[in-house]
Length: 122
View 1 (cartoon, rainbow, N blue to C red):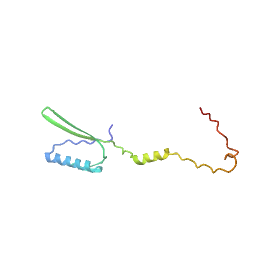
View 2 (view 1 turned 135 degrees about the horizontal axis):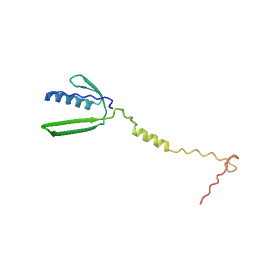
View 3 (view 1 turned 90 degrees about the vertical axis):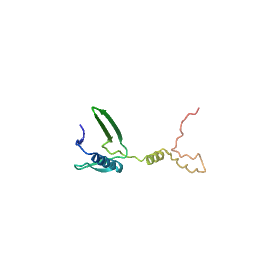
View 4 (view 1 turned 30 degrees about the vertical axis):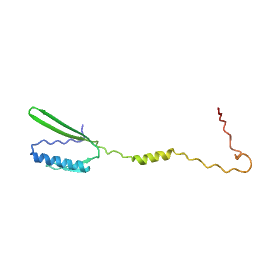
């Protein structure tokens, strides 16, 4: 089931058809929250920056049918700033090297509680 469907079928002059297309073109050019005057009233739409389009022409039975179709999702896309995300990723990959403790003049520099690691090297 569709969330909303609007369909208008009526006879109109070439100039009326051009006016409707001009109103739609202006709304597409403006984008965002656009309003389109369609003779009977105003249609309000959210038009994103990117959409899919299709133009279809059929000739048959003594008629020409021209369909212009645009599609876009109803949900607003979540924008994650690519540069900021990349910078944050680099920042999390950086390792901080702890400062070396100051050496004392006697002994090995380790306190009594420090254990040596038992790593084997080949």
